[in-house]
Length: 302
Figure 1 (cartoon, rainbow, N blue to C red):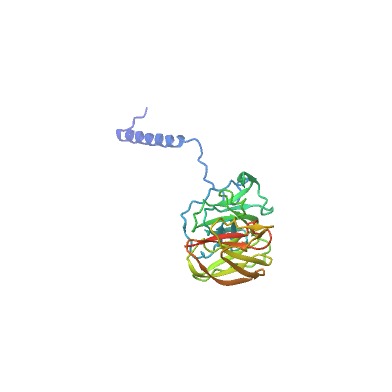
Figure 2 (cartoon, rainbow, N blue to C red):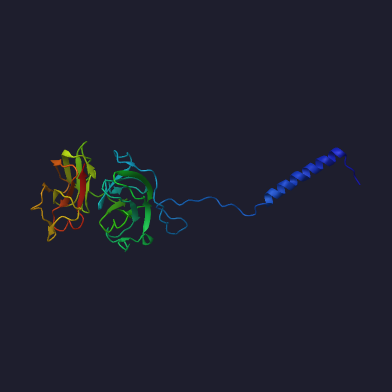
């Protein structure tokens, strides 16, 4: 029998102790840790449909100048205006969403090939469990804006609001990724201190929900595909409460009316209006049935 010297015995004990520690560490976790994974917004993972992403809760800011490299989107009561309704290539698209109205609205992008007004609904709201929401924000307070960046595949989308019954009230616009670029007129920013009014096939917009009182330059632009007559009316009530008959706004008898010259598609008109502090003004289409269909908006002078 071989006898080890005391020094070698001590070394052997130390080696055995270290080996025991290593074996315990290796055997203490017999389940492999899976690698982390993420599914990009607007895409699908594992062959299934992508879940609706959580609403963006990024800090909002006061409305400012358009952000370079983004698609400005204006929200008003009750319409959506995208300053560009088409991008050429699929991929990440950055939006800057501004609430230009006097009420709270949210913003959502829904992948949908059908008619703009044909999204499935439940209790006057979009049935989000039946559509593919690829991006959304929390509700925005009036005068606030937020950025939203999403990955969009080629196809058609609906830009809308999921707040209350905004979609049912008319807040929707189309947005296309890929394909031929539409030839619709493009909006122009108003000059400093001026108010911009924009009329489309789906609604009307004011560049600001709150406007400084006094003499104000107003530019009205027809972004639709047909000729339109528009009127600006001082009105204390809601924007949908103007008197009408047979689908046409009755301007006779109203206290303060500012008619806008008839505008062909893409045309604009400039005028000056003395806005009275504390009063609201309604912009309304005079084309038959368009006012009732939501071609209207409201702003207030302060």
